[in-house]
Image 1 (tube, helix red, strand yellow):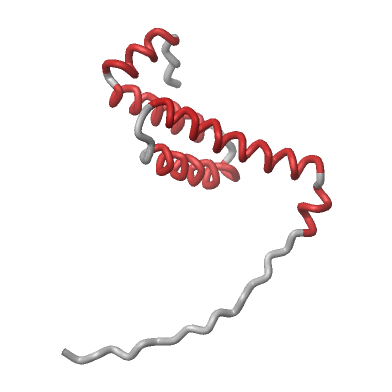
Image 2: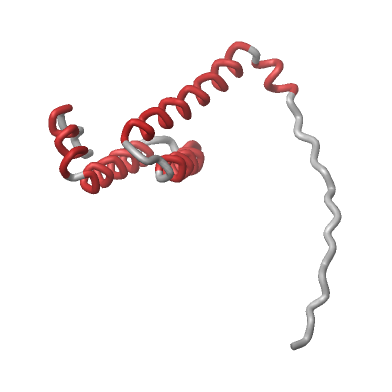
Length: 109
């Protein structure tokens, strides 16, 4: 498993070699996901992809940090709600709607 460098090294990477820092981040995330039970891997990979997509829109490191904290906080709030109100969570049912589908005829060229 890849060892996490100390803070000063991470700071230096952020200032001088941001691509190398990003590679390190992806490596550490992949290794962490690989250590998880198979039942959780798909969800974790999906969350990682979502996080990367959100972070790619950020304009600077502070924006990335704020966004990552906000996403984590949202997840913790959802988990807190489920833990404190499990009956309410179990009662939630999604209604599946049947949407009509109209096929358009193909036009000949």
